[in-house]
Length: 233
Image (cartoon, rainbow, N blue to C red; front, side, top):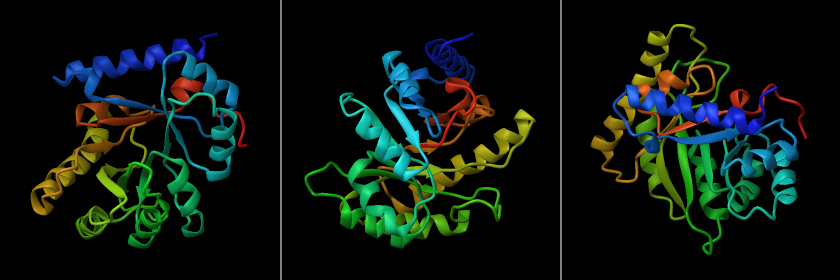
């Protein structure tokens, strides 16, 4: 049976291959290990194999893991799930990145509740690129207005866009969805002049190659590293 370290090495090889095929340096793609539903021991093994960025969807589960792993001071924690307004304080206090901002009110609360002693919270706006009713995110047309609002907040640093396109089996179709998000980021950089817009958080285990081909700078990989989800804390 492959170990977590084996799986992690394989994912990095896949990223490197996809990046090189796209004429990119593998170092331009950051791997985010999606650890929701995985036990603390699995995160420790992944960290021991060299992984530092971990993504969580559920706040209480994440806080429990952060406490259990407090001795690992170099972990970078990313919140990637839907954000309830009454939970923004803990997210602002305990995470380094937030990928799922889709409302101005949530962004304002995160900024207000981020301590001035901390570095600014790195954030992405979630875009519902396929306009699916079941998913969170702003429409592409709404992204610009929200981006300007978020960029003006003092304790946030707007870094880019995140999306979870609908499942597609064909790599060409996968690339089309990611290409739309990449084009939206380019448009926002030009139209808003926000200089920090440099991040495309897109691509998961099933569509990593397509995402990297279209410019992903962060790929969110869970199953390919940890295997099937084991538990929800």
